[in-house]
Image (tube, rainbow, N blue to C red; front, side, top):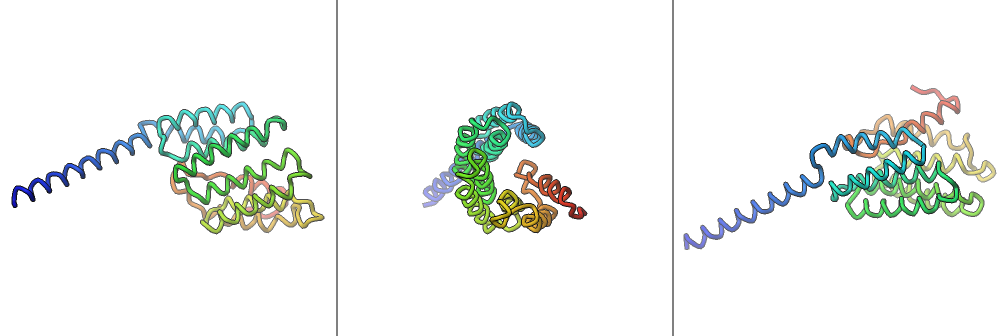
Length: 226
């Protein structure tokens, strides 16, 4: 009986050690040496440019980051962000193609268990970007999609300021005849600023974009900035 108990204990210890080894391996794959600094530098690069070529270069760097940290959702998320920004600033005829690539990257980030509030917010930004191709033909449909996604993101995490920015932008770009425009959007931008002032990103690599756009709008509208 003692021998049986000993063997069971040995097997349990072996399984525990194996699980710890697998966990350590997975952690190493997710964040190898130099990964965080490389990601931080790439994110900073793409946040500081609107040049389509530079944004595509950042997206390519993030593709390489995927190969060294295949379980991390953030490279795919920021790849989608870079491509969305590229679609907004690049040739009009390439907009849909680039946004299709952004949505594919976003879907992969979702499969990797990314923050759903952030993913929905970026999906809303992609939907807004589709309007660029045909404002009259797409405006109502894609603005509605963006609003729905942003509201879902806000419900999941009321502290996330980016859905408030998306909603403010939607109103800002809606014709005044339909209740939009700068005056109608101002209070939403002010709400977004309050959220951004209180927001703390989950990590140094976590999504943290959007505040400058809010401040730029409020400054141009003559609102007081604290």
